[in-house]
Figure 1 (tube, one colour):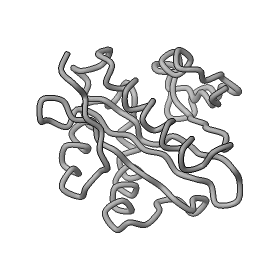
Figure 2: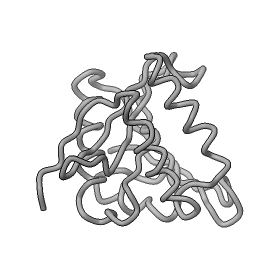
Figure 3: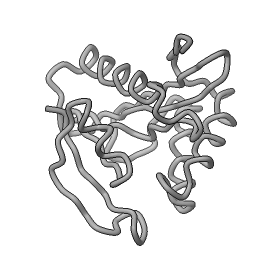
Figure 4: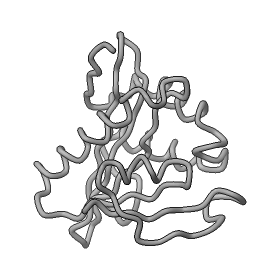
Length: 159
């Protein structure tokens, strides 16, 4: 496999990120989540934050052979030493090729360098919690049908 390059998101990356999101509906995201994702991208485009409980956020894209094939970021809670993974995804046909792992490791390293000692967390679904487990995350809570009927939420923290 060719080298995966990861860099900061730019507003010109929006179209590719939206296409990746749409390609992961309905298994990994619901149609109803698009507005939240769009809010996240709007905040990135304006160098602000999408969530009221966040004081900072960052977003990256993964590039393979000159094409954006993944995106993902994190945000830092306003009043707690917690970093939360946000909107991580890989183009559907490119799953299980190491792109998601490279993107997640990049985000973890960024958090550990910029915010040492912060707890790193993620919420995900039953379809991808094992991916996070392989990289050191532990499930702390499962909420059935949280995102939609048949789409459960797994809260996890990096150990």
